[in-house]
Length: 259
Image 1 (cartoon, rainbow, N blue to C red):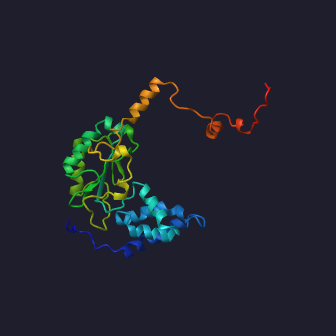
Image 2: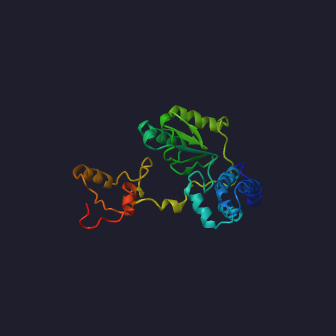
Image 3: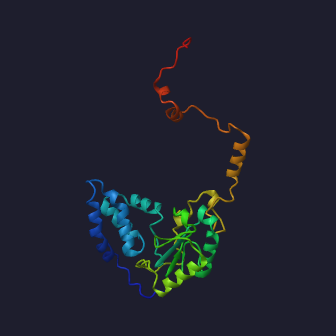
């Protein structure tokens, strides 16, 4: 993809210099030896400057908090709010969870894909939009909902989507654009994460299916529960004794003949 107009040549030294004072301020808020507690806000600070959390940013964080790089990488990969590849100026994240689906999120997502010409975890060729069908955003009372650069938008309709996309293109939308320090690729997923899906979530062709809808094991378990009142062999494990009667753990067993 050719370079996008207006994106400067990336200079990570300058980027780190902008973040470093904030990183030291955050680290100073914690007791000595607890610098790791500042990791999440430092990652957010990098993303606020770069638009994503780059491998160089992860390595610099590891130095600042004096932790192995593996600790920083595992933390960054756990939280979906951190973009680990360059993304568009506007990250659009409609919710695809239960309440939103019941209230029409399937149509909303189809409309987004048609209007943008891209699919889940993809970016438009002009670098304006990145699109992700997100898990529950915890705004079920205003479903279907979404986030635009982490800002909530509620009660979505196709007309509301069209107006939003046009306002973003016109530069009049009230949510600020993300910075861009690098040209985003068409596909912004991280391949290591894509390989760690459960068997029911692999090879799913429908982007509205977050995985596992073709897995019949849940239905089999429900049928078993309905037909067998005691489907699980309950053993007196230590955990169950702690939950049900902790005194049994310390009381001596009764002697033979005792009542």
